[in-house]
Amino acid sequence: MNQNITVIGAGFGAVTAIKTLRKNSPDARITLIAPEPTLQYYPSLIWVPAKIKSRSDILVDLKPLLARLNVQFQPGRVTGVEAEGRRVLVEHAGETWAIENDGLIIASGGRFLKRLPGIEHAIAVCEGIDAAEKIRDRLASMTGGTIAMGFGTNPNEPSAVRGGPMFELLFGIDRLLRQQGRRDQFKLVFFNPSPRPGNRLGEKAVDHLLARMKKFDIETRLGAKMVRFEADKIVTEAGEFAADLILFMPGMTGPAWADNAPFAKSPGGMIQAEATTKVPGFDRVYVVGDSGSYPAPDWAPKQAHMADLMAVAAANNLLAEFAGKPATTTFKWELICVMDMLDRAVVVFRTEKRQFISPPCRLLHYAKRLFEWWYLRPIR
Ligand SMILES: Cc1cc2nc3c(=O)[nH]c(=O)nc-3n(C[C@H](O)[C@H](O)[C@H](O)COP(=O)(O)OP(=O)(O)OC[C@H]3O[C@@H](n4cnc5c(N)ncnc54)[C@H](O)[C@@H]3O)c2cc1C
Image (tube, rainbow, N blue to C red; front, side, top):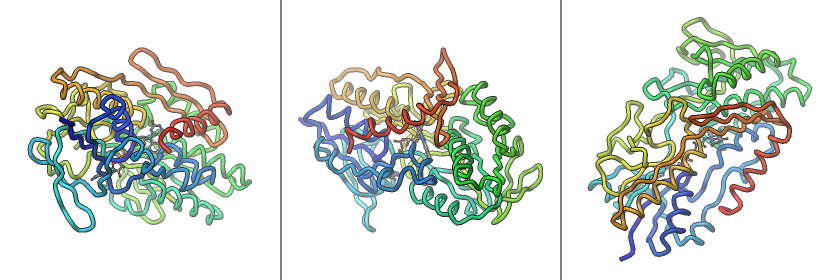
């Protein structure tokens, strides 16, 4: 009998999961549930403000890939899971129904915490192409002023933080304004509740980032908890400062629909998983990428690269379970971040055994652009 597999999401984890499933199980019936059959290529959002990339580069139509892989697309938003994982509840165009499965892979991404009062005064690039275009348009319309950029955390889940893209935006906007000959009309401020922001990247990387901010005349407001945002200022426990444009990446939590599912959640609200990506206590249910919380080193990143590695493990473990074998495949933790600065980049690399940061290099900027093309070529 052909196995009936449901994958939730259309992001990095979901796409890698369906590719791996189809490669290793030509006959499985695979259904992918997501609001749109579209992958958002988040890593290139940082280039939208400088007009290096546009909407059509970021949004990747998955319909051709789904047809090639013979995956059925079910439009809709998952609202819950029942029957020990065997039934997924979906809402679309005002209607709700249930989709049954023999195996489930959850890859519906994370959700950004919006608890900070006045958060509506900030633009959060993590929200995708609309937010990135808003930043592009605001920058173009401003003739000067203060641009404040920072990121927050989830106090209950230290790994649920995404600082890398904010450093990229910070140095990218600095470089863009210099290229446009108007950097002297702007004050750039980087703010963060930690005195050493980005410490998951490693001590050397933090030293490098702080030295770079000093070199490029970027003011820092570090070590003070944020209290609220207002239309023209940021208030912290250590005082307040003016901001004409606030760019902020909040800390993350798990998917909202998980409140309507039987799975255990981590302290930070992610779906709890084992090292194999299996959801403990549930047969043939796996979670990958930003939706999950895993046994991990304290520097473990939430990255597309990790979502990909987890998705391969999840798909292979699910197929092993179908074959009556134990789910034993795990994945390796590694942080690889090519941190772009618009015309150059540094690479930050970290595993259990090694860590390094390269000097800034123009070639690495082009390597990051080339990687996007290479990664998306088999998907487009
Ligand atoms: C600006 C920015 C830059 C980044 N740069 C990098 C980088 O350089 N390198 C890197 O490795 N990582 C980077 N990341 C992180 C990376 O994008 C994420 O870690 C990655 O997208 C996580 O993949 P995922 O599959 O878990 O979730 P996502 O890619 O977020 O996909 C989630 C999917 O689930 C769908 N979904 C959501 N809710 C539901 C629901 N209720 N029902 C059904 N479907 C649902 C969504 O529509 C989406 O298709 C960056 C992130 C941002 C925001």
